[in-house]
Amino acid sequence: QPTESVPPAPEVSVTSQPVEERVTVIRTELSDQEKSVLALGPDFALTPRIDDTLFRRIRVEIASCAFKLRWKSHLSNTSSCATLFQHMKQLGCPFQRPFAKPPPTSDIDMEDSLKQLLNFTLRTVKNAKSVSFNLTHDEAVGLKSLKNRRDELHLSVSDKGGEFVVMERSAHKELTVNHLTSTGVYSFVAPTTKYRGNVRPIANPTPVSYSRQRKSMVKNLQDQSNSLWKRICETRHLHKNMVDLYTSRNTQLPTMYILLKTHKFDASAISVDTDITQTCKVRPIVSCCGSPTEKLAWICTQILSPLLKFVPSHLKDTHTHLEQLSSLTQDQLKGLKFCTADVTSLYTNINILGCVEDVIALADEHLDELELFGLNLTDVHEMLELVFSNSFFTFDGKIYQQMIGLFMGCKPSPIGAIVRVYTFERRSVYTDPHYLPVMYGRYVDDVGTVIRNEEFAKQFFDRIAEEDPDSRLAWEIDFPGSEEKFTPFLGTQIRVDGEGQLHHKYYRKPQKKAITLHSRSHHPYRMKVETAKNFYRTAEKSCSS
Image 1 (cartoon, rainbow, N blue to C red):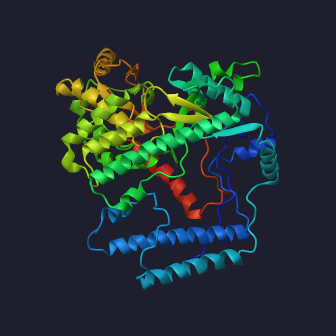
Image 2 (image 1 turned 90 degrees about the horizontal axis):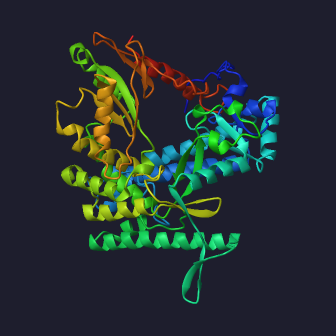
Image 3 (image 1 turned 90 degrees about the vertical axis):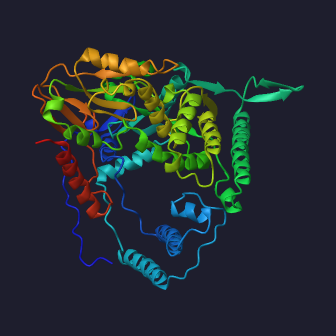
């Protein structure tokens, strides 16, 4: 229970940026009230209504919390995990067996604390007879208007700007369908029927035809996933609890959505007559939540994640490159310049079979460092190939298949992409220690390095690209034109002067909207304070002076 009162959040403006610049509107019209509520940002939380629904939610959330705490307490009091199932629980497995029983409630102190927590929470909410609404009158009018237009408008968040993007649903569908049909990466899967023993596409499919096709596809993929997992468990003599835990049930196909790259086009210049398919740039995301292979993907990710520490070029976070650069002496940096490179469409240009082979090969080299949970690499190979190869997804009720590359949204995809590019680096630039720069780091598809000149940079990255047998790896290089120019990289700007002195500072992309957690948002006061503090901590950590 809190021992001191928390002061209310100050009513201050979080930004001086005009409302029009904090909302991107494409080929539609919004009122000033609608723009004002959207300008609060995607993270803005409305004040909840105190009613029976809220009390039910509180009870359910605390019951869920109690269930997890009881398991954690039960397993922590066990000297060693008696079963693999208990060990998976300790790792925070997000899946539960159907009708899972709670563990023994032997911890009396914890049970008493849980009861006090529930009573205190319910009593506190009941005593708060009314909570002031955190929207102004105009914002409330705008919110109601947007609700009434939900069948007409499509709302999403931009790729890197952080603001709401509003457009008509028909325009959003037009952009998505254009991406699916014009890039050559995806293929439409038509509904089929059997006629006299032959399978042929349905001439005029109906919504019922598409629904049957989706159900059939889900059942097929779910059966493949469950059959593989059951066979692996039987071969490795795993307990039936493990079979149940990772058996897929009530799944659905992955779904695709797009994020608009508002930093790559001028939305204000788009009119009704503008061809948005040529103007607007998008980033495709395929969500695999609840998919038939989600559980196997989680196991593969748990097993293979430790491999990243054996990839010398891998940057584990957005500040590791500053630590590596700061460790270099001025003599080592003298005569060098910091430059960056970006892999063009990395995920959709990766050969799946080659990627799986590279990951398994690296896992075999560091087998002693991996926890296989009773499996072996052959099992992991089969599961990973099944997860990556079944690249079916839906959009607008229709099924498509991604013909090349990895899903951006599948859990093991980042590991596969990082290891695949490292294989090319390993065969090229890592073969000669004298050829490799004194600093070379890669955050998935973004590379930062110090190098002599632009010509050598081009030769360096071409040498890596030449190792791709499919010739799909392509680099976009950003080399500074002068010693005074800073080069942006992972939230920082970096420059090496002629004397080898390192300079770096905080960087915020010009397209990034000035939107953060609003002071009126229904978040804890301390969270708002820490949000502001984190901005200063990040800036301080990113600056050399």
